[in-house]
Length: 156
Image: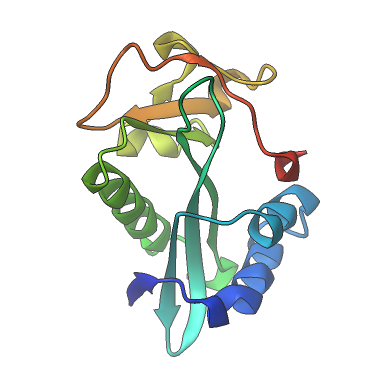
């Protein structure tokens, strides 16, 4: 069952992220330190087995969303949970009138949701991430929304 994350879910989200990202300090810092504007969990049998969040980045006068991290328990991967979480997060961002969502992720996974190379859209990363730096244009997309993105310190 997909639902909005609640404050009581935080410890379970951190534990899930730890397992899904094999102890990655960056992923753990992001879920511990950043306040998401959109945070969704997927429950199975009362346990949180999936999570995604959208947080704000800085880019001049704009504050685009960044989708990160997307976590699914290893025992529940390849069941469509990550896809369902991603689609719903993007739907909510679109519904809120956001022009785009950024992601630093697997270049073979995220294009299925409409993500494309962000640099081609004039969205510069703080450093070269190659094909992993992507953006998806939403209904309110405006090509004038461009510039260099600054990540919060939690991203390292």
